[in-house]
Structure formats: structure tokens, C-alpha cells
Image (cartoon, rainbow, N blue to C red; front, side):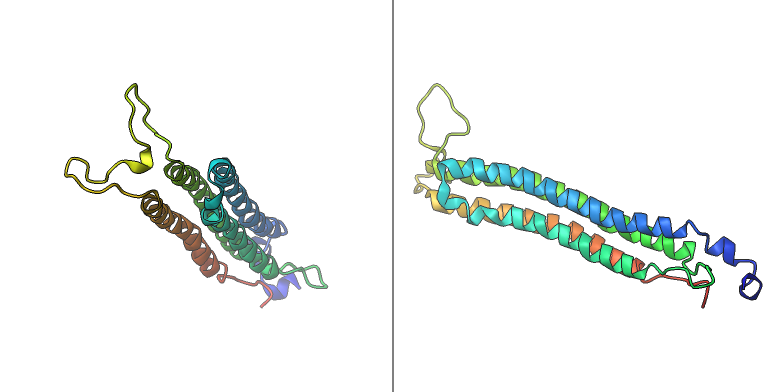
Length: 210
């Protein structure tokens, strides 16, 4: 059988090539889930902390947690696709899974996993500070206390010195929330970029038995 396939079969399709492919599968799932858990932890703690003083903002500020959880789904999708692409040896114990395919699967898993890890950390940090900022503004907490008495942070005029009207707390919350939401969307896009590249790279394959 080896003579019919040529002398390049043991070189192109070594027995350990499958291990490299499964490392790509594990990388996509583990790193993406790690990033998802990291983002959920950072944003979730600040959400619960803010909910103590401003419970009405909990449901609106749950968006960072949802976006962090989606990153784990990206890793799951890539891991399943890669796992289904790894072929088993035939009845003659000939391995058709090449090192070329294994390296492509490893690269795909790392693209998705590391991108998800970075995106999860970014979502967690942005969500942490963003949720706290919205809660502080809603609770009228002064972020810069001093010896002189001042109005609550949510009551500071936006055009102070021009005689303008005070900006309401709800308007300030909306401005902060929209800014946080834009940052979260671009943070989530990092994981999406890794998913797209991983899906493209995972299609590169070479079978020694064909």
C-alpha cells in the first residue's frame, strides 16, 4: 500500500499529525471560552455592584455579559468544524490526514481562540468601567469629591458658565450607555474577525489517500 501511494506518504501524513489537528480544536474551544468567562466575570461583578444602588439599570447593562457569552459560541462553532474535518486511518492503518491539513486546523483554532480571548478581555474591561459609570451617573454620586459642596455628578451642567440648563441624569446615562455600546460592538468584532479567518483557513486540506 505504501508503495502504491509513494514514498512521500509517511512524510506528508505522519501518525502524529492528528495530534496537531486536535490541538487546534482544543485551542479554539478553550481560549474562546476563557475569553468569554473573563468578560462575563469582569462585567458581571460590576453589574451586580451597580445594581445595589441602581437596580433599574441592571437589565439595560446586561449587554456586556451577553456579548461576552457569544464569544464562547464562536469557539464552539470552529471546534466542531475542525473536529469533523479530522479523518481516521483506513482499514489498512494508513493515515490520510496530512500535516498540511493539521497545520491549517491548528492555525484556524489559534485564530479563533486568541481573537476570542482578546475580545473577551476587552469586553470585560470596557463593560466593567462602563456599567459602573452609568451606575454612578444614575445614583448622582460625585466621582471627584472635594471639601466644597457641589451638586451631584448627574446634575452638573453640560455647558457650565454659559447659563445653560442642567443635563438630566437620564440623558447622561444614555450618552454613557451609547458610548459603551459602541466600544463593546468593536470589541466583539475582534472575535468575529478571528472566526471568519478560522473558517477560511479550515477549508485548506490535503488527503494523502486521495
